[in-house]
Image (cartoon, rainbow, N blue to C red; front, side, top):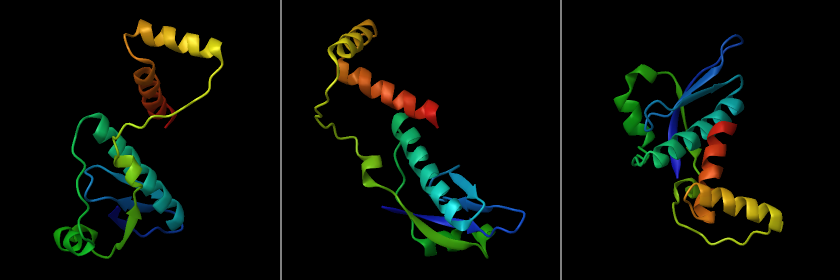
Length: 135
C-alpha cells in the first residue's frame, strides 16, 4: 500500500516537512529529503499502530490528484508516495515456535498468570507496550 505525502521544500536553515493528508495529524520532517521520507514512513507506521490499538479504521489512500485539488494550502509542495508494509495492517494471528531457557519460561508464565493472561497474550501485550515506550 502507498500513502501520498505532501513535502514542504527545505532550505539551508529549515527542514523538509512532510504531511500525510489521509492520516489526520500524521506528519514528519527531516534535514534532507531522504531523511524526511524515512521519517514519514516511521510516522505512518506509528499512526497505523496507534489507530489499530484504539480500534479505529485505517483510511484508504487517496490519489495524489484528488489531494492536490482538495488541498490548495500545499500548492507548490512536492508530492510523493510512501510505501507501507501490509504486515503493519495485518491482525491475523500466527503460530510461532520460540526457544527460551526454562527459568525464563517459568518467570514468563508466573507473570502472565498474575495478570490473568495467557502466555501468548502476555507476550503480545508486552511487545506492544515495549514498542510504545521504545519510540
